[in-house]
Length: 392
Image (cartoon, rainbow, N blue to C red):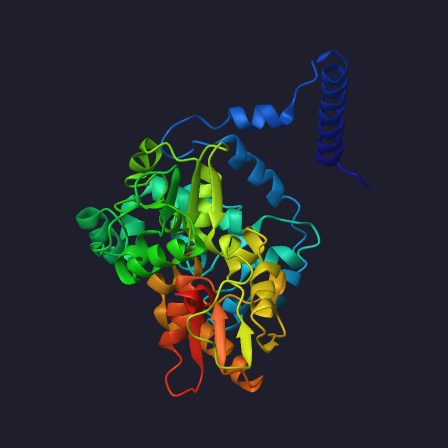
């Protein structure tokens, strides 16, 4: 039997439901139709925490496509070789749903991603996972820059002292070409740790008159760790009013292609190697080509290096995962700065695979890939070279 208290409770519940239904009906009939997406953007004001650019808002909407199917996990080599420290792209996408200040607590996860984008090639919903990772790193930097610099102290030190993340640039002894409208942009890493003179000689060998640019950082690698808006000397590059810029670093190639006006033609060095150009030193066969992530997945240059090796008559073998499906070397996304041991484990796997395939030479076309592969290559009878090195 129902007592009086239960009857009263049911009556109140029914009455409230009726009022709710009545109010909802009134709103449904009388309210103006609103663009909910625009309304959502309006919630974020342009302040130091919640500032959202249009493309960033679109990335957040893109996040909603994730069905947490886990397919991306199987494609993520860094997650597999992180010893449990990095839970992979699926975890990262889930973390991105938290509030911005909370990203600092997930900082370790976010900075173990190499931004290689292999996970995106297998995602059935085409979620832009690596762009989300970049965005979360940027938000950490916006909220508390000191958190970023605390884990990249050497980068900050070099940036303050030399205007780039690597250190003091090497001085040029070769006479620079006069400005012909074409600039040779080696990137700060190559200017600090590489051999700028060799690149000038290669450009001359190709038959191009170009002026080498020093004291300029495109900010690409800095953006990969979240330090946005830092492009030391980029104005100096633009002040030369170039018609064409030749780059030798896949990360710079990607960064400049996104930042510079469309009227400036950005070319990668491999695109300028003419058929029939003689090599200075042949590579020991069999040769295997390692696809740099930014060159293959970001800039779609996969067939050109293979065509060059074919034209040179090289015996080429392939990694099981190659071209757009190739694995990362472990250096991308600043991992070579953040966790050198984890980056080395990823690179060692590629050396092991190359050895099992009988390769005597690994060719690549990225300074970061070459350096990391060389570091873990001790004791192996395998040479690591850039494809362009053969023409020096």
